[in-house]
Image 1 (cartoon, helix red, strand yellow):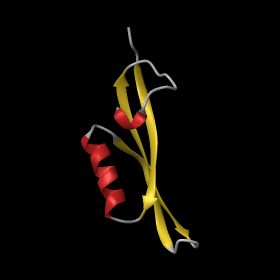
Image 2 (cartoon, helix red, strand yellow; image 1 turned 30 degrees about the vertical axis):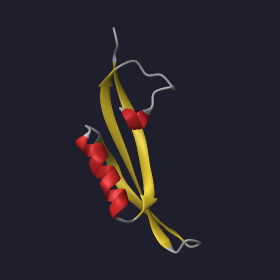
Image 3 (cartoon, rainbow, N blue to C red; image 1 turned 90 degrees about the vertical axis):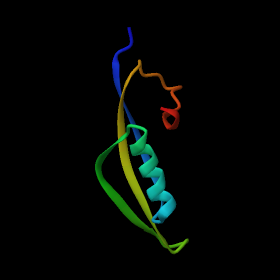
Length: 71
């Protein structure tokens, strides 16, 4: 019998609409925000980089081979 497992992902990317769409898509697939978003400035690229942790509970045993983005 599979046990309930909490999966964790950390999404990163430039502070633009595509990053917001990635987070929105994850939320629509049952992931939840975990903690506060982070921002840093990439001086080489001259842009702000966002980060957001997300979690999701699944009825499955954890295995390192899980493809988190497909859950």
